[in-house]
Amino acid sequence: MEPERKEFHAYDSELKDSMERIAKCMPRHKESRYFLQQAYHFFPVQKIREKQPDVIIYGTNFPEEILYALKVRPFWLRGGSFATAVWADSNVPRDTDSVSKSALGYLSNEFFDLTNKAFIVIPLVSDSSRKQAHMLNMAGKRVCTVSLLAVENENSGREWIRQLERRTAVLEKHIHRRLTRQSLKRAKSLVAEAKKQARIFINLCEKKPGVISGIARMFILDSYYFTENIEEWAKHLENLNRWLAACKQPETAKKSSVLLAGSPVAFPNYKIPFLLQDVGMEIAGHIDGGVCHLVAQEYGREGKQGFFMPGNEYGKGCFGAGIKNEALYHAAKACISRQQIDGVVCHVIKGQIAYDFELERMEELFGNYGIPVFRLETDYNRQDIEQLRIRMEAFAEVLEQKKYRKERMG
Image (tube, rainbow, N blue to C red):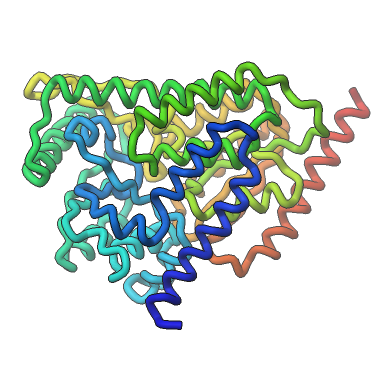
């Protein structure tokens, strides 16, 4: 097999395996086909080759309202692929986290050529992201950085708006289009509706556990970042919400319900969700920066030109490198209040130590409710799956015994 074909095969095989497993988890409703199609239209090699995006967003930490107001279809680069991580191995230190390697693999290869005309927007959330921005810049890529403020204070909001205004001017020059009050208003309306339907979807899933599996729920929300039309996405999710609201909750044997927290899980790497399902646990919810961003309520402030610019919800603690991740903490508290949580799996990707700093708070929070917390460290490699399976099975057994004792006592 030719080297290029071999690389393609590894990537396509990873994508195919994930899609087949996710398809089996999706609800029996016609809208499922739409959400699956979003992945089929975004990730295959040939589809990516055809995209040639104007703007690539590294992570999810940039307000999409500005992009849609400029009529940009952003390419959200969130990692998620073991195959692309391998492509970047020779260009980064050995201990680089899998998300960073995967993202660089998408950008720095001769197969996709994503950066042919694209401007790469990189929010600087860590020393790693700063070094990656420098590497790409030195490689001749067009890079635009924006600093996320780790501490919220009276000046952080104003500084964020100043940065957004400067970066918007750069994007306007790149794509030869101007941001207008009307286009921004329209974009804010589109994003607000999509986020509203996402919140409704999450609430319905929590009220009717068992109708839609945890993996399907994660994938449907994930598809927000690889759809090409969020207005259409919101309408299909609204249709799914209507169906879900009318469904009766199935009477099935209740599995142990776990909350998945920590490092974000990005398609196609659903290694941990699949393992949780394999050992008989159900993902009752998942919280990370991407989900908090997706369901965040809209707010903002006036810019110097009179535009009501999107606010920085990450200043409220929605990203991993924040000093205090209040949004993540309160999302965890909300999950406890709204549904039955038997255990918590804190998923940490090797190298992303920022998420480990949250572990003590999480353990204290859930400990007050008698909910066990299990820390799991891994990467995109599949070599540790059997070892992880053994540990997860042991945790699942702990949760089952705890439920059994509670039922007998009560």
